[in-house]
Image (cartoon, rainbow, N blue to C red):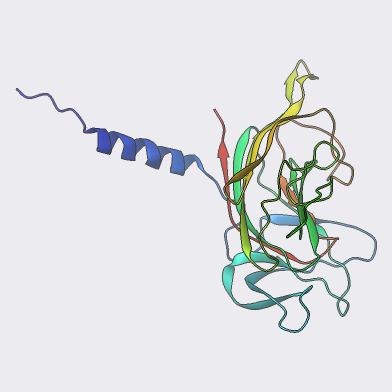
Length: 231
């Protein structure tokens, strides 16, 4: 009797499908029912779902076209300032993949666990990079290089994040960012995060937390958000 042995290709395919099955998206592409906003003064919730584009006459603003798949923050001089937005979905150690569109001069941020900020900024063409530039871990380390695309173009982040560890209710290991890849280039490696970034969701660390996008600094769009557990 013959013994069945799966081919290498089928084995690799199975492993790939298993990995894909573990990935989650906190954004369903249709609505923002799984997201909440953080109150801030008189700011309004200006996040919507549609297809993003830079305003044809005002390069620092965003317009929304009919469609789905993109979550878009739309503050402007006409409608005021917006709010930070965070997922009801929470994660621990994770690989986070997403795409971002930043208009000219705009500013946002990706808050891991709602507390540790990876900076989002229109840094295209800059030669001297600081703590506020695209890819900086705010308050911890500037990016190693400028991998930013032109404003209005979609850009891709891959973030490998390790949550703080706890034992008997006490923190025994700080959070750290293993690696940040922007548009295919490594811009951060092995950065320890002993405390939260100012302006986070609660200012408190936790073993699991949401992903939060800064919305009170300018227009921005996010899409293709995938969060996979690290092993």
